[in-house]
Image (cartoon, rainbow, N blue to C red):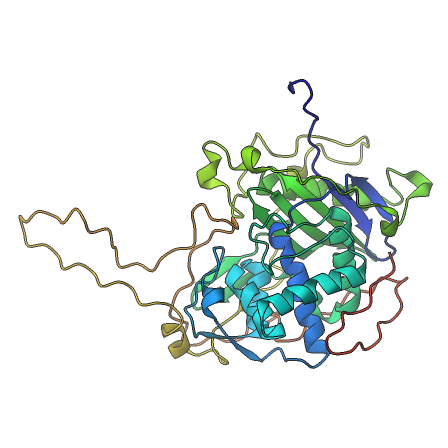
Length: 432
């Protein structure tokens, strides 16, 4: 029971046909919301556009700056001076949600962070994302970093249309650095049939966000969920939304379904999810990795059609891997010696005490490298990659090579072919 005068909170959702921009379902899609790590979709879009315009290449080496190394987790944790190619950095951004690599990409593309953020905002304006403003490239908390479900769907359509050759980049199930495999936080991939992108996000203020795509036959859908209460809830809710959308002609609007551009951005205050997802005990555990079943937050609702299951969990399964873990590395080649210099050295181990001697209660060091888990600002928590590599790191069959992709999916039909813009100009926006 809600207290008197306090309105019920409904997290924004949106389901759109990627091809036509036809809205199948929406709820508060124009409401302002903190994007968290789905910000990185714009970071990658701007970087891909820079490559297309010849400003840099996928194999361009970029050096980790002090500012990049200082970013809060989730992060790769490379030390200052480590070199990473743009291609490897983009994969780390999309799979590991690495905040330090998003910062590195921004500096590598534009030369400085203010210049890159200005380019992000110019691109958002050009695409028609009228309710969006960026302050950083990774989505770490900033009160002025804001978007809407509508705008994120516009961005997803732009990525699909303008960069079809990079389609596989957004559906990598896992990356492998050295001996460590890091799984994508998008738990729809290899669990919901047809799921093929794009990005998750979490900070305490936003709750659990997701921009996801799925394809069945010739129909590709975009689902946007903002402010879910757990990773499980957003995954299951997206699965249910997709299942509705793949019904032949279903829409909450019937035959009068509007186009995405007809959904207005409402403005107003940004809802703060902090107390709901990071209050009490969950202040310690809330993270992007929180994808375990949670009876309090899983999708328990159903839709008025007998063809659909009662919960999103029924739609998720363990599917055969769509591709093996994609290898990533530091340096400009996959070499063992490069890993040895990518991280700060371990602190020296304390000498073992002689038999019968009293242990030093002040010593807390275990000699292990620091981990990136725990309660972090971005919520993306995972173990730090190992500092040594497999001596034989062959490219797995089906892995995404630099600057290439699997067979691209069809472009959205109503969008005219993009012109070749000036080097610093954003790509043309798709019709919505």
